[in-house]
Image 1 (tube, rainbow, N blue to C red):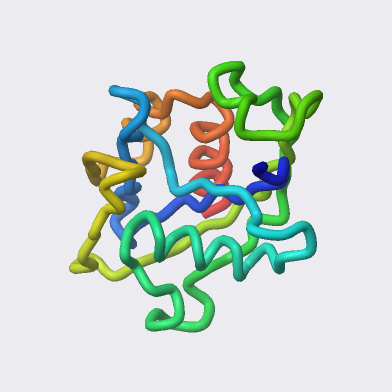
Image 2 (cartoon, helix red, strand yellow):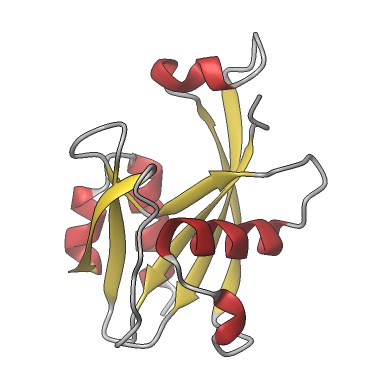
Length: 147
């Protein structure tokens, strides 16, 4: 069963382009890197780095130490009904913690094919519109509003 605590990582380049990845289990569902904690007391930055590596092949630990930033923001949302079976019975809400990751312009992306089928770099304004989750768009907007 999944733990109802997750991370969302907005990956971006210095020119403002944002990485979006398309879910393998839902066509046209574009999103940033997301994932649940592996155990209840998993360190959030470690979970964020793990999810980035699993979903994109990008190793946070090979980047500058300040590349991964905790946005110090979290939201609680209702889990989509199609995914509630992944959680314990009665669990319908998830708490998501937001992070950002600045990557070099020439970074290579290698998707986990069981999770994602495509990726694209988009100007942040376009990425906001393409996200299927409104909160994912809000995370991108918050990141670029603070810059």
